[in-house]
Each structure stands twice: as C-alpha cells, then as structure tokens.
Length: 355
Image 1 (cartoon, helix red, strand yellow):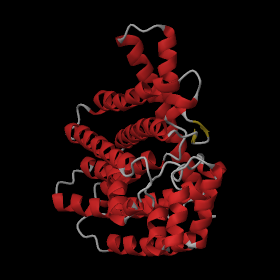
Image 2 (tube, one colour):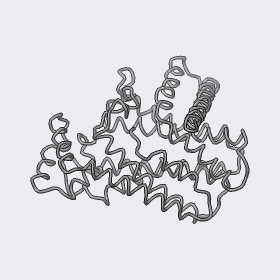
Image 3 (cartoon, helix red, strand yellow):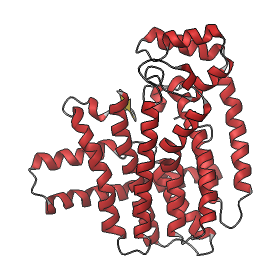
Image 4 (tube, rainbow, N blue to C red):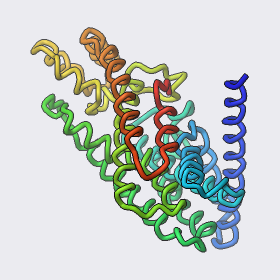
C-alpha cells in the first residue's frame, strides 16, 4: 500500500507541475499579444513551439528543482514550504524545462536526429524546417521573461538569472566539444576518457543536475561557497553516470521506450561505449571500428553493435552502474553542513533508468 501511495503522490506532483505550465504558456501568449504587434498566425506559431517542444519529456529536471528547493528549505530547519514558495519553485522548474527544450531543438538540428520524445523532431516537420533554429532561441529567451515577471522582486533574483546564464554558456561549450570531438574521419585515438568526461561535464552535468541543486541552495539562502563546491562535485558524478546511461540507451535502448532513435554511431560520437571498446580492442577490432563507425549505413551500425556485444560492453556497463551508485552514495553520506535529500532524490531518479 505504501508504494501505491508514493506513486500517486508523484503523479499528483506531476499534474500540479503541468498546471503551472499551462499558466505560464497563457502568460507568454498574453505577453506577445500585449507587447508585440503580431499577426495571428505568428502568435499561433509561437504557441505551438512551446506546447510541442517543452512539456513532453519525463520532466525530471523541472520536478527536481521543486524537490531540491524542498530538500534544502525544509532540511535547513525553515519549516514546510509555503504555497508561494512551492509555486516559485515550480516556475523555476519550468524555466529549466524551457532550457532543456531550447538545447534539444537545436541539438536535433545539429545531429540530424529523427525523433525526440516519441514524436518527430521539430525541425523535421515540413512546415518548420530550419525555422526551428530561431524557435530554439525564442524558447531560451522565454526563460528570462518568466524570471523577470515572477521573481524580479526577490532578493535572489540576480543570482538566479546569472546561474541560468552560466549554465547555458557552459552547456554550449560542452555542445561545441561534442560536435568537434571528431573530424570528418574516424580518429580512434580520440575515444578516450579525458575527452569523454570533459564533454559529459560541460554538455550535461551542469545544467541537468547542478542547476537544480544550486537553485534549491540559492532560494534556501545557502551562502557557503564550500557547500556549493561539494554540491557541484556530487552533481558532476551523478551527471557522468547519467550520460553514460544515455550512451548505452542510444545504442541498445528500445526507441519505443526512450522516445528517440539513437544515432551516436552514425554521427561518429565519442561515447562511453566507444571508449570502453578501445580499452580492450584488438587490432582487428579497431579495423572494424574504422571501417564502420561514423557511417550512416544500417549494416555498418549493426557491425559496430555486434562488436560491442562481443567485447561485452553491456556487461561492463552493468558493473560500472553498480560501482557508480555505490561511489556516489558514499559521497552523499560524507556530506556535512547541509541536507542531502536533493542528492539522494537525483541519484535514485536516474539509477537503472530505461529512458
């Protein structure tokens, strides 16, 4: 019975969170109508951009903001969150989801992806195409309009705005590293841990995990920079594990479950799988990678996946996953001076995920 109640509670939180999204979209629509002389078709187009790209994922990052604010606020002895504070946390959660949508719309164009969240990538829609580049930029700027409307009077407003700016820039640096980690030809020497974890940190870890935690800390009044450094260290560890999962799911996940068709092999990406393969590959194995990796060909992709299976990469990942969970749990247990509920929530949220 306890498990059932917990599931219902999470479902209710998700529904309440989605209700806030509807309110924010209405406000953004009204902002455009009141402050810009736009024809009706443009207002409809922008509305569609929001509802198509923002609310259809797992919403893990956005819901994590609410949980992190709650963990730091209540864990610091400040009492229960007020309805007003909860609403502010939900708005910040949607700002993170808009940031995620901005990144994904742009990333899908750069990667030439086919599907995202169980539907065609926005730019793949015939009537959208490369207009999606500007659409992604609009999603980004909507973040700051929401922050200004709802949080400008708060003492933490500037800190929050600067955090979003820093996380956006950091992620864009990571995207650059990801896109330029390989040239036109496959270079197996670049499949190494130094390259991989640098991409992981800047492209994923900061905005996917540290952003939610830092927002909770800022709103709860945490000032100690050492605590922010500790939080960053834990979040980077969770993020690296999360991105390794993502690489596995891209290759071996079920698209009906993940909501997207993996293309890392075709795109010549440096991934956890390619790095692990290089650690144990023979010269013949490396020859298979050189001949088949980075090619948009079904048989070539199948050859790489067969090699991964033969090198027991899925089994190696299972071991890595268990070790990562234990290591991060120990890091969390060692924390002093701040509540750890936010870190426990994030780790348990991603452990053994299937999408």
